[in-house]
Length: 339
Image (cartoon, rainbow, N blue to C red; front, side):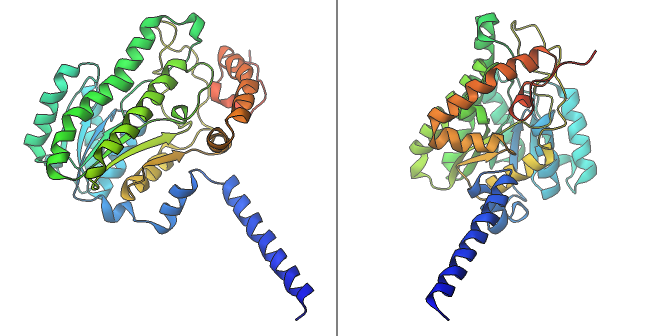
């Protein structure tokens, strides 16, 4: 074989390899480390059964789906949110779809803003199960409003729920994990914890705060290698997060939530969250394209990221004002609301 032919074959192989990787990236719905863990890493079915997981925000959306998938794995559950009736509904479905028994699920209504109640709630969980293996800080609210039109009370409320409530509950659970020298602290952040876009300034601020806090906490807990601090960063996911989002006033709700069908299925997002937990990933990005590409651009070329974000900011605002979902601006042209 001549050298020219050998080099041609090597070049062809390299081009095929790059082509395959490009296709995989275009079709990716998680960061490369997460997808590698899903392919070659530890399985949730091996790592998560027979543990006790406390899930906040468990009455709807990602938290509800987490309860269902964890129950199928045989994970005992503590289900928390402010709505006790919805929690009972989630509990009953968990019992229907899994082998868990009544005693394996504790419904524990909890208000993240009532920080004085968190220590008593933690004691109740420990009295009931004797341990907390996984704390999933999933409770929180989003935002859809322009800063110039938004009352400052909204920023106080969203910070109390998303940041202070999460920090408070973590502070109550952490001593137990330190005593046992093991545990997983999993916090549902967002891609908005990595960057920022129009209409979510308060929400993005809380997620940036969570990243700063938990990244620092992880460093403080380095002496406890079996205590894992994880940040999960989903992009747009099918849930009622927009329906429950803050607007210009604390008491006001979003009037037009827009179509959510184009977003990632909640079941897929939660599956990747479980993969992250099973493999003790420190941070995981869970999103389909083009949002996933923005994560890499924000990470490695922030100047380009802000240029692109600003270009799309007008579409995002106009789509929202037209009664469409603001996130649709990232892959659709400006749309007009039909009559």
